[in-house]
Each structure stands twice: as structure tokens, then as C-alpha cells.
Length: 365
Image (tube, rainbow, N blue to C red; front, side, top):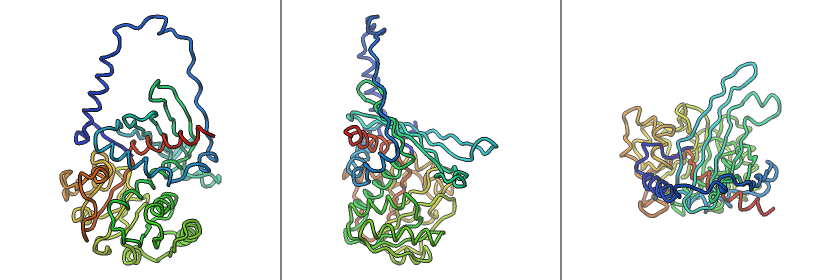
């Protein structure tokens, strides 16, 4: 979940920086003291709880906004810092867990967003709690005032991640590719399935996970919700033999499939790697595919590309395109029977987009 650090020159961050500096240069040399000492108060932000958020925001709401954000990101029209990570080590009074702080602003929009996503608090399970939480803070882009504090407990993160998956299906697969597999069957897999149904209705789904009971439950839930046929299978190899589109969303550091398992013309959409310790895909697959990612400067540090760079199997020049370049038509997506990998680490542009969507819907309640 990142976006351009200083190394991300390929995203024309410089143009955004120049615009910011120009705006500063237009400030009056001195503001009247009475304006600086204004007693007019900024209204407090609205608070939205988890139940309100989950009952009013859906992945289908986010796809067009996230797609536009990817396009803006590729044009250098999004300001996104490299994410902050806070590790909570395990002690008698805390952890273990992780907190990711991300955010961004899409030029021309009326809001910007900062997000705290807390994950891997696995000891919560013993207390009947989910393994993490989170909030979105949506800000007024005109006056810098906080508009909303949204308790979303990673729901909005999953929604905007799913939207990115749906956009990947739209641009990187053939319209006739209607067999879709899911390796890993948690919350993100459900969001990916919902987004896929929005852009490719009537697909046939397959699922594989380390927990067979959980995989079957995923299939039952998605079948009932989406009206698509879902089947749980016994291995990643069986899944890849059944599906032309393969989603991977697992949290570990062990690869989940092999290049030899994939059919010609397969598309692998990987979203599990968002830290330097994670890896879902083998290096030989990355080095022998059309590799697309959300943001080069981010995947080189925390995505699948990181492992290929470390092995000397790829350089950043081997990246075919960023997803936003495909969305904008600067690079073609699916062209034939090539293997395509799309590496989604999550960007602040997506957070800004879903923050805007959430504010527009929730503020009207």
C-alpha cells in the first residue's frame, strides 16, 4: 500500500511538487492579524461506525472511482507518500501486530484521506475479536478541515483492493475468460469475487485454501450472494488447471503456485504481498511474464517485484506497465495468450478514491 517515494520519478511527482510550490508562492507576504486570530471554529468531523459503513458501501460503488484514481496516478496527478509502518512487538501489555498508515490526494477532488490499517493482532481471536481494526480520516481539500472519522476496521481497504482486482480483470483478461480461481479465501478474496462479478458477471469460480472448511464456506457464501457457481478444490495445481484468471491473496512468505501450473493466457492477480517479508509468486514466473503492477516504486520494495530484484532476475525496466498506464490506454493490456501477472500492493490513490466515495455516500445519511 504505497505510492511514490523519492525514487518514483517515473510518476511525474515533480509536476505535483511544482504545483504545490506555485500555490505557496501565491500566498500574500503577510496576512492581516485579525484573520490569523480568527475565532471562527472548524466544525467537528462526523463519526461513522462500522455497522453504518458496511451496510452502505459496496465494492461496486468503488470500481469507477478507483479506476479513475489509477489513471490519475499514472499521469502524475496523485500526491501519495510512501506508507508508514509501525510494528507492535509482543509484550505483556501489547501485540503482536502491525499498523500501516497510508493516504493520498487525487488532484481536483474535494477530499483527501489518511488511513490507519491495523493487522495481524492474532491474539484478538481468543477474545472473540477480529485480528485488527482501522479508521479512515477524510479531510476537506479546500480548507484542511476534518470531515469524517470512519471506523471501517479494514473494510474499506478490502473494498478498494477488490476494486483494483476487478479493474485488473477488466483490462488484463479476455472477455471470454470466465473461469476464476481464488487462492486464499478470506475477506479480500470475497471482495475480489464481488468486484469480478461486477465486471465479468456469470463467471465460474474455484477456491483453494489451507483451511478446506474455510474454502468451502467461501464457496457457499459467494455462490449464494453472486449467483455464480463455485467449487472448492484440493490443490493450487487443480485450481490453476481449472481457471484462466487466478487471484492470490495470502499473508505468508511461501509461494502459493508454480509457473508450470498455469494455462497459456492465464492472468494472475496477486495482492498478498505488501511487506518486505511476504512473497506469493515464484521468481521464474515473474521473470517470464508480462508483469503489470500498481506502482513501480512500491512493488520494488514491498511487492512481488522485490524478490525478483533481489534474485537478480529482473530490473525495474522489466516492468511492462503500471495498471494506470493500461487504464489510460498508454499500454495495451491483454494481447494474446501471454501470461500476465498483476501485482497489487495497494496505493494511497485507492485510499483517497474510496475515502471520497465513502464521504459522498455517508454524508447524505
